[in-house]
Image (cartoon, rainbow, N blue to C red; front, side, top):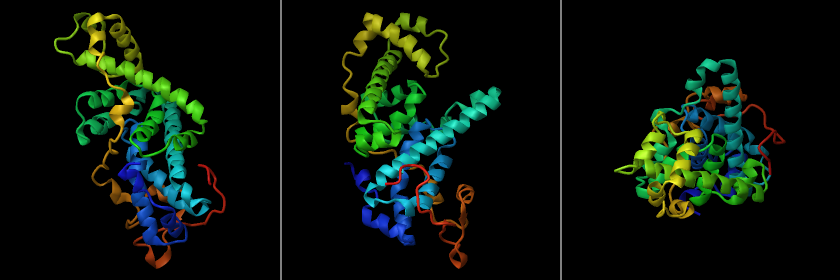
Length: 305
C-alpha cells in the first residue's frame, strides 16, 4: 500500500470521530479527501462539478459515520459512498440532458481547466509511456470512467480489488472481466495516441482522421484503432508498449487542487450541501463544526458494515 493509502484514518480515529471527537472528525475528513477527490475527479473526467460532488460525498460521510458498524471497514465504506455520489451526479446530468437537449455540449464536456488526464500528466510529471496511458484514458467509453477511477487507484496501491468490487456492487470475477475489457480499450487507445503523435506521421492515418475534430471519443478510437491495426507503419509504433499495470504501479495520487481542502470541515457556516442533508450549527460552537441534526441508527445506503 502506498503512503497515501496508509494515511487514511485507522479504526481508532474513526471510533473517536463517531463518538463526537471534533478533532478526530477533522482528521478523518482531511485524510479521506485525497482519495475521494481522485475517485470523483477521474470518474467525472474533470467536470466542473467535481468539487461539488467531493463536498457532497464528505458531507454524507460526516452525517452517516455514527451508523458505521465496523470502523475497520471505513475505507471500503468511503469508496462506496463516493461511487454512489458519482452515480447520483450522472443520473441528474442525464435528466438535465433529457430536459434541455440543446445544452448537451455544456453538460457533457469536461472543464478544460481541470481535465483529469491533463492534470495527471502535469502534476505528476508523467513522461513517455505513462503520459500516453493518461492521454489514452480520454478515449474511453463514458461508462468505463467510473471503473477507471477505481482501477487506477487499485494499480497505484491505494485500494484493493475487494474494495473496488464492493464499491461497484459486483463480484470480484465480474469486476475482473470489466477491467480486462477496459484495459483492452486503453491499450487500443495507446496505439492511436502514439500513431497520432508520430513525426513524421502516417499519411494514410491523416486521411482517415481528416474529419476528426481533435476531441478524443470512443467512436473515433474505434475508427482510428482499426487503421492502426491494419497499417504496417502505425502497427510498428505500438510494438514497444509496456504493460499498463507496470506503468501505473507506484504512482502517487493526484495532489489536491489549491483551495479544495478549505471547504472541509471547519468553516464559518455549513455549506449548501450540508444544509441539504439536515445539518444545523450546534449552538455556541457553530463557528467551527457541525454534526447531523439527528443521529441515524441504520445506514440508508452505501453499505453500512
